[in-house]
Image 1 (tube, helix red, strand yellow):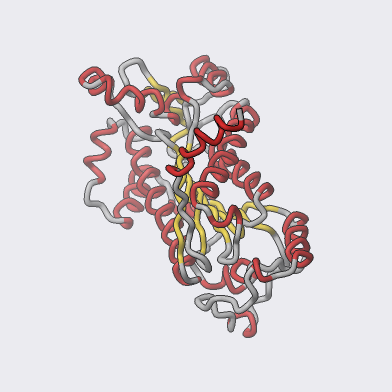
Image 2 (cartoon, one colour; image 1 turned 60 degrees about the horizontal axis):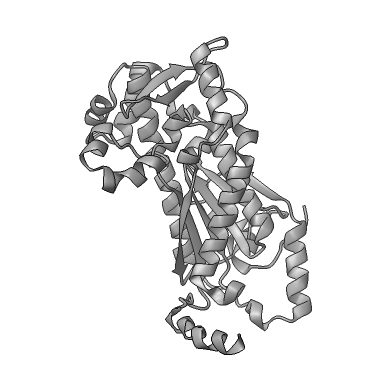
Length: 349
């Protein structure tokens, strides 16, 4: 039997590993697959072979009747799953998410899995997905808040808007459906690894994601106001908003529906930051001198002693993992939390 094992072992030569560049920030971005896509029943019939897999995975938000434009339960579920990932993987310094995506940041000094891209990405996305599926009943067992709109999938491939009102049989039926995941519409996520060489690159990446959150949320808030309050079809609302600027959308919301976008919840406008909580520095002159664009001169993790690495791991393990809805574009965020860039634990709160 041993000889047979050696006979077949040559197949390992086909395996290839991609090692991420040393001394670079590692970002793992995960995205929900088919959470908001729309595939019409007509198009499915035209090409069922090509579109059938997408049909099964698409429209997670419609199938489970997510509140439009934002379902706080879905966002809280994403945040809870992200918190679990930080509890499991102590090498992650910070994560940021909005809608159905999340970015997890590993420090430059990270040596997890020898920095093998596939191992890191697959571990993050599988840990996140497992937590998301496990926690689903906790967040969707409760009915939608009264007065909100839900979009329910219809047999024709579109959606029917139903308002959640106490005693409304339709809204109660949708709420019951949400508590149980269907095998044909299981939420899944994909993942990719990106390396960023400088602190400045990392900060710009996270700023880009938060700016994207604001742009998308303003559009979605206006779009669904036109559909749910203005009576437009999805196509009409899309055409109406073509070429509009942010100022135009704010004016539409206020003049037509009395909605002040500035009063929307911060979680909708800014997304969610998940990080370990330490004592923040006061915005003093000393704190402002922290150069967020220059790499730390602290020794790399693989140069630290085993005792020191274990001490850092335990300190991270003890710290509370919190969710914040704050501005990460301004320098103050980084100056008050220098441990995010140094990789060393901060002072206990």
